[in-house]
Image (cartoon, rainbow, N blue to C red):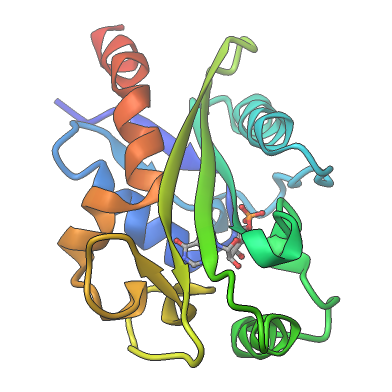
Length: 198
Ligand code: IMP
């Protein structure tokens, strides 16, 4: 029997591969937006939950398939919780991941308060507009310099509590188990079971 198809409402290839691993035990086929070049992603605001729901609902409506979306970010205590929902746009459109990491380190240089957390809201939406959203969090601290080659985004400067080294130094199985996305997806499990029961 073909597995039900689910679209990931994100153009981030790092997220697509993480979500594929996270959903590996479920009988769904997670497809990327590349298969739907006409589907437009909505503009995002500054509220994780609303952004995740908006992305999942609009891609489900545009493709006619259930859609999964997340909105995530890094909250840095020394910056009053910034960059938060603006993490992907931190420093403006001219910066790539490495540039955003450099900016973050310069903005926090000299700060003794290093606590930080990754936050994720994951939403699952059906083409008829029904949707569920759940939150996940991963606490840790901001390192003074980037280290490790795995993951994406701010992983090289984030050390999860209870682990040695940065998130970019953890193997994929460890990151998936402890990450904000892994936690949010665990909370979404009942919604996935509902999707598979149809
Ligand atoms: P979103 O696509 O609007 O959810 O943007 C999330 C942004 O937060 C990403 O572009 C990254 O900069 C950052 N981010 C989210 N999750 C992670 C992660 O697991 N590791 C590192 N950075 C992340």
